[in-house]
Length: 202
Image (cartoon, rainbow, N blue to C red; front, top):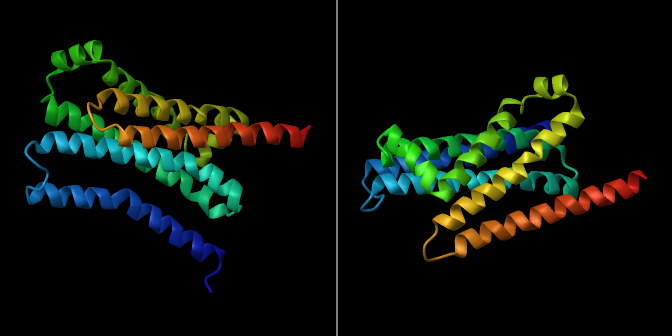
């Protein structure tokens, strides 16, 4: 039976696959022309969905740790969080390059005129300090309390991302509803755990 370090390594490799395999699939689909009539739009949507899913998985790692107590979950959380950030940056770059053709005046106009783009941009901006401070050295430099409070912004970023998707959706709302429900459950769990934790510590 594998020891604890081997199980953690296996889990981290699984997280690595979860973050990188979508890129392999996307490259395959692009190469063989299987992304539909508008490949650029398909890439923009795929990268955004992938990033949002991984962001919600990052949030879900905390309750998973609370329920299981397995330290490997928390060790891999930073890894999956950085993958979420990577895919959301890819989403923004795909929109700017493949959809807007790096037309900066038009991009600025779109950001001013379209609320869902502002929500998406705000979500990504909130994730920048989280990605920059995700490393253990930064956590020690900031102190755990300040670091912990800063990283609670992930819930705000996720809510903005879900709002971005919701406004963008035109017909089938099943996916944004699923994302919104998942985020609501994770948020309720986090608030409840904080309240119960405060009572236990009192």
